[in-house]
Length: 251
Image 1 (cartoon, rainbow, N blue to C red):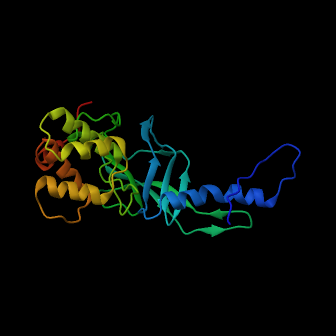
Image 2 (image 1 turned 180 degrees about the horizontal axis):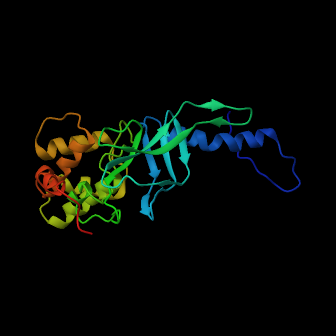
Image 3 (image 1 turned 120 degrees about the horizontal axis):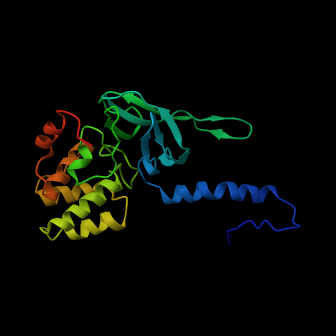
């Protein structure tokens, strides 16, 4: 017969090595069970804001190589105005000391529109003196080129494969419910987006395939975003994006 032991740290008792080991192993073992079969990616957090020349990235958690990595809040001086930038989270090979297993990481800004070399946290193009917006007017607004935090490419960890931001899917769900033109398969998917983040990649791709009546295939994050806009009733985002790329939005 096996048994599960939960350490009790009671006054007057000798602190035992076995109790500390059980305390150490519990969160890691729970995470391994809870996220088994999940892709590497963002789990929670990493809220981004800008004020007085500083870009602040809040606390966050990623799932990488079978381990939860916790990141602390970080502030980075920002001067790359009117340039496209990508905020990235980069992990480096683990190292060990006598007391700790250490996983180095950095949060950095890369200028340009190329694909991220780490885990992308967001991208934007900020005009000097403007506010970095995170309040989106509609689903299309997530892709506004200037002064808006673009999270459409953020790779979230998910069962069976990387998936898209729960914030983006909630905005899609609200758009579907508000436009009053739902199809039968929309409602179950909408409630899944609202009540069960993250939505698995397989579920998302099959929904897009069936809803648009196209063959099932792998899609990049940007392709997924464009199809969500199409379903939500805002038309193709490409024409609108060309207009937005002409210059800064008026804030």
